[in-house]
Each structure stands twice: as structure tokens, then as C-alpha cells.
Length: 144
Image 1 (cartoon, rainbow, N blue to C red):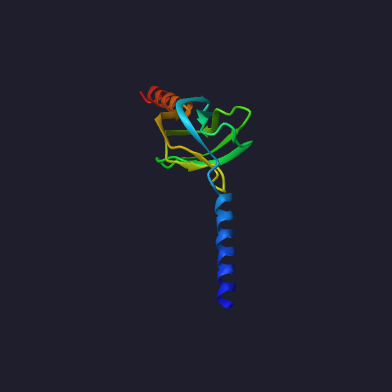
Image 2: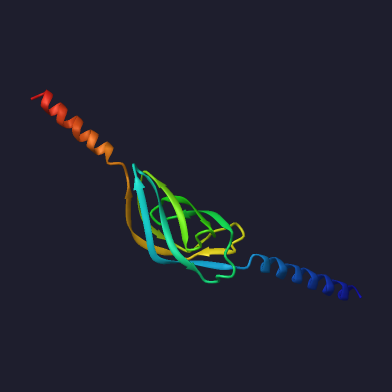
């Protein structure tokens, strides 16, 4: 009788673990299409990745997640179902290469962003360099 109770408890624990694993099951995957755009003005802007969801019937309302690039830069990206083909990442004062591995977009690991590799981007202010050049020219004129 004791072994029957233990077997029953073991079955309940096993069933409960299956329920928990089903709750954290992958629901959808966003696959970047290779189309992206970057807008940068005065060192502030954003990068938009276009793509598609593998399961169009199960698109989340909105997501906000960290995107860790292989070159060490980190962005906080967001998605809303108002434009279901875009993921937007604000950028500021940075030069980076858009290259990342598969990334979960939520804490429950239900939505996945497929890895993607693109070109290098530059969103740095040119005012610093032009001001330094102007300063160098002024010093050169004053001391010659």
C-alpha cells in the first residue's frame, strides 16, 4: 500500500513538471529578413529590423528586451504588434556591428529572436571632430 502511495505521488509530481514545462514552451519566433534601416541624427537614432513571425496567429502584444551584440554593445529593443514586421532598438553615440545570436525576447522564454548578422553602423557625432579640427587650425594660425 505504501509503494502504491509513493507511485501515485511520483506520478503527480511528474504531471506537474510537465505542466510547468508546457507553460514555458516556445510560442513564436521572429526571423529577421535581412532588411534593416538605421536613422541617426546628432548621434541619436534607432535601428529597425524587419522580419516575419513563424506563427502569425500567435504574435505578442508588445515586448521589450535587451539585445546583446557580439561586439559587446547592448541595446534595449522593443516590439509592438501595431507594426508586426519591425523590431526597434534606440541607439545613441555608438559605432557597432549588428551581429547577435538567438535571443529570447521575454523572461518566460516564449518568444525567440533568431540570430542575425549585418553590416557595421556608425552613429557618432561629427561635431567633436570638426570642432577639434577648427581648434587645431586656430592654434596653428595664432602661433605662426
